[in-house]
Image (cartoon, rainbow, N blue to C red; front, side):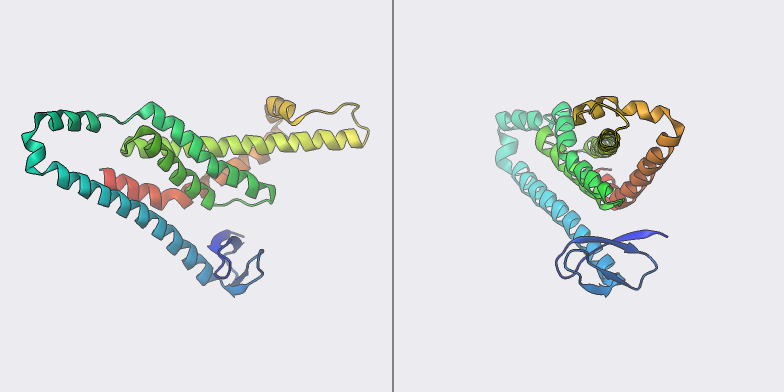
Amino acid sequence: MATVQGMCKNCGSLISFDDSAETCECIFCHSVFPREEAINLLENTLNNIENEIFEGRRDTFQAENTSWNSKEYHDDPRILEEHEVVEQKENVVAGIVGALIFSLAGGVLWFVLFQFGWFSAISGVVGVVCANIGYRLFARGESLKGVIISIIAAVVSIILAWYMCLSLDCYNAFQDWYANGEIDYKITFAQAVRGSYAFLAEPEIARPYFTDLAIGLVLCAVGAFRFVANSIKRYK
């Protein structure tokens, strides 16, 4: 049974529900309304975000292009030289750092939703959009390269969030074993983070975790596809 994402028309919260249901209920405000309204509201919200980002970029470009095309700029060789320097100033290394930092928003969202047993496409949207914003802020420029780096940063954040979920499960398991008298020692969460990868050597443990990761990445890719496709078209 597949799960789809929507937005509550009453309080604006993100909600999940079965794709076969005719109505949906918000878990936060308990409003009940047709599923199509929730789906359409979420899609319209994402489209508005993309349009606002694009319009802001276009207005900035037009303003800069108008100034650049003025006779005053063409007649002053110092302005020509400064303009060439600005065009080449995109700092890719700083952009990578910014993309990784901002993409953590998607990873945190994925981690939180995973604790409730949910996989959400919105995590991919948040991760890629925030990573792209971080890249542009830190790199002081934007390009197709920045979009690709943002996608990679979002994937890295999701994988990191997935590993932190594994570490938390490992930590909780040790706490339960200690409480039940099965072991005579406790571990800290930091120790769980450092050593939980060892549990992936067991096929019975690794299989469900890697399955969860694959499903989560696919849903995130589906959620971020429209934003990525539109960004690639703009830079071609």
